[in-house]
Amino acid sequence: MINTIGVIMMFGGYYKKYTQIMKGIIVDYFEDKGFGFIKDENQDRRFFHIKSIKERDKFLNNLTDYYYTDWVERICYVVNFTPSQNEKGLNALDIILTKQIFNDNSIKTEFPAIVIDLKYDTDSLTKIMSGITKDKSAPLGATAGSNGTYRIGYPEVSRELNIYFRRIDEIGWGTIDVRELVLTLNDRTKITDSLVFALKNQLMEVNLTIIQELNKWTLKDNSILKI
Image (cartoon, rainbow, N blue to C red; front, side, top):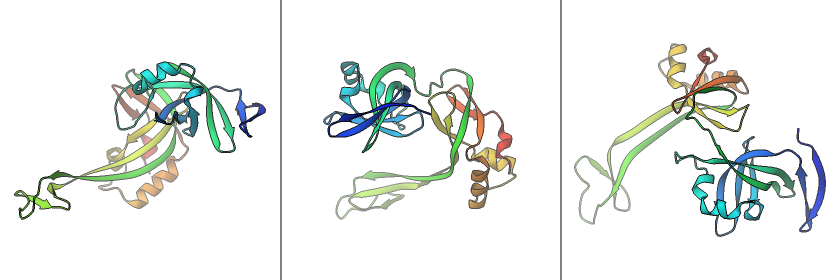
C-alpha cells in the first residue's frame, strides 16, 4: 500500500505524490517531444517527461541502455522513480538511472512468481520477396502475391502454450512455453480450447517457483500443469 504525502497544485491541475520509491523500465520515449512511458513493477504504464530524469544527459547519450523493447535481446537497465498520479493518469517523477539489469538471466537462481495469464499462441510465417515485374511470372515453386511480391515455400507455423508470469520478489516478468510439457503430462496429442480453458482456470494468480539458468526459465514444479 502506497501512502500519500499530499496533494500539490500544478499547471492548473493536481498530482498526488507518494512516499514509496518504485522500479520500472522505459518502454517508450519520443526524442522529438521529450516524453515517454515507464512500465512499473506492477506492469502499469506511467507517463514521464525528460525533465524528471535527474541524469538527463547520461540518459540521452545512452538511450539503448535504458530503453526496453521485447523484440531486441540486449541489456536494459532499471530506473527508480517516485510514483504519482494526476487527472490524466499515472506518472513517474524524480527518475534515477541505475545499473540494475532488467530480467538478468545470466545467473543461476530461483525466484517466486505469480501467473498473470496463459495463452495458446500460434503464428505462421511465409517468406515474402519482391521482384515480380509486369508480364513476368513468379519464380518456380513460388506463388505470386500483390504489389510485385511472391511467396516462397509453405508457411512455417509455430505453436506455443505460454505462461505469462510476474516476479514477486523483484521487478521482472516473462513467458515460459509449456506446450510440450502439458501434452506429455496430460497424455494429449494436441492443445484444445477446453484444455487451455481448464489450465487457465487452474493457474491464474497461482504462485510458483521459477528456475533461471543459462538464459532460460523453467518451472520448478511441473505438476501444476497436470489437469
